[in-house]
Structure formats: C-alpha cells, structure tokens
Amino acid sequence: VPGSTTHGSEPGKLVPLFTGFEHSEIDQKRNLGIAYISLSQREEGVEFAVHYVDQGVAMLRECWQTGLRDVELAKNLAEVSLTTGVGEAEMFARYVLDQESATGKQRVSALLVMTTHYLKKREFGEAVALMRQVTRLRRNADDWQNLGQYEQLLGNNDQAAKALSMALEIDPSRVYLK
Image (cartoon, rainbow, N blue to C red; front, side, top):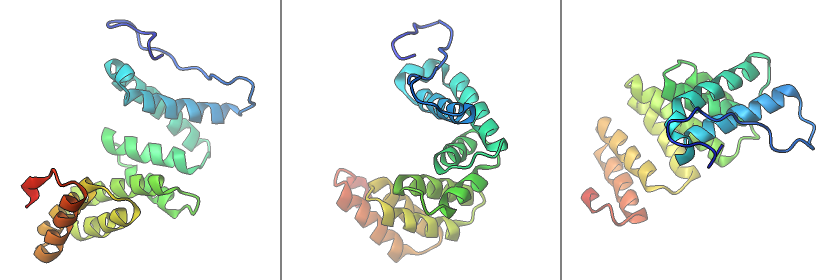
C-alpha cells in the first residue's frame, strides 16, 4: 500500500507478503488486522485511517471471537477499543497484564489503557497506581508529567512535585514545569 495510492484514490488492500510460510487462516487474519491498525497510524494511511481501523478491528475481533488468544492481539484490541469508544478496552488490557509472556512495551500499553479507563471513571487513585507502574517500566517525561498531574488531582502535592521534577530531569526543555 505505501507509495501505491494517490490522493483521492480508493483505500489499498493489504495482502500477505511472505507466502513461503505456512500460517493458518486465523493467524493470517490476525497479522493483517494488526497491519491495518498499524497502517492507519502511518502517514501513508492517514487519508483512509478510519477505513483501515475498521478493517483491522473487524479482523482482530473475528480472531478473538474464534478463540485466538495472544498478547499482541489483545494489546491491539485494547488500544483500538479505547480510541473507538467500544467498552471492551479494560478486558483486553487485563488480559495483556495477566500474561507472563507480555513484553514491557505491551505491559506499558495495557497499563496506559487501564489508566485512561480509570481517569474516565474519575478514579484517580487507581490511575496514579497504574502510572507509577508505567514509570517503573520506562523512562518517559510524559509519563512522569501525567503522574504528577494525577497526583495533584488527589491532593498529593509533594508526590506531584516529585513526579513533575522527574519529568523536567528527563526533558529539561519542559521549563514550564518549574
């Protein structure tokens, strides 16, 4: 698809590239579904992002409904469910967090989905606990800044100041945090 469409054309259709490998039909559908979601987030796919998300979600949901369970499938379903407003994001994120095989990146993604879930419910204590886990898994100024803001919502001003200080330490260009 990249480079093959021009403005105003029809959305591209993804096809498997590696035909020498034997994948089951459901695994092919899973891989294409993840690829559609990924394409929707790339510059080449932005014109048809909604279409690509719809394609990807349909494929991934079908995989889940047929009983396929894996961490990357659940992570993608959690993220897209959160952004599309479908209420299953929490279930998919919990699945990811329950799997010992989940990578750090997959765990962070699931924790951020769960954090957003709790923020929407105005359960700030839960959001803070989850953001603390995120900051232990990766060094990211945005994470620390968000943690500081959530701590402020709870009235934990000392903890908020420490988190915001850490965000500034990681990214000194955030002078507005001083």
